[in-house]
Length: 283
Image (cartoon, rainbow, N blue to C red; front, side, top):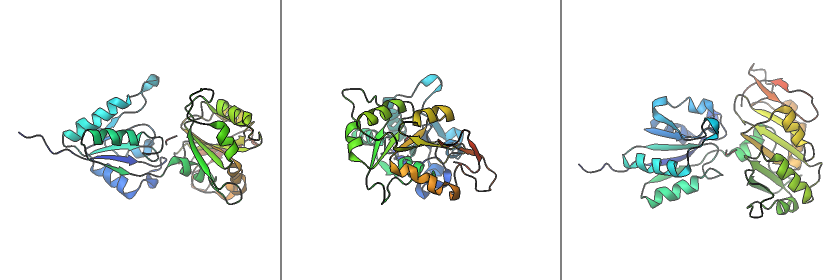
């Protein structure tokens, strides 16, 4: 018997985590797919939309173990060649620090048809829901997106922190909470003012979203005091100061809108987290 025609692999961005921020096409594909390969970043409420018998966790395991990217690539090809309709579900947008480009190239090399379904990138949505615009006429006409995984002291680092400090504008760091002391020090050494506003947005749009703000000099202490943990986004630049101007009237995620939900909002000038309401990639 002839092998079945290959199925299609859909590289789908799930947005920052709130199911309401899935694109219409992403939601339809989740409902129709034979199997969904996902990591942890899509968020618990989105993963709950997928029946357990149709989803495979290829993200981080207990104890820090991860599914190697090579195994994910091979699994996508295997499932597609079995005639399956496959969704590869990623947080944010699949092509923003999501290895979607690597998976697309692997699928093409193995003659597997695929489609890219863009998602709302957490690099923009995370700051936005916290009241921080990544660009602003008065503060920033450019924005740089960088990964925080790299050690800024590495000679071969792909991130030029000195150039970023000199460029001005907004710096958005994804996956960088752990190395926050390293790159804030690198930016200060490169001449960025210690009083530059900084915002941390943890689990943007998830039910337990938290926001903490400070300055380039104080933000590490703020992170430690407020217990900010991954996944979180760091926003560095004058735009981060805009949150203070709007937070009293900001509604939605992690702020008090009278809906009776739960969350936390913290700032450098408050000693404790504020009880708040409502809920909350690459980050």
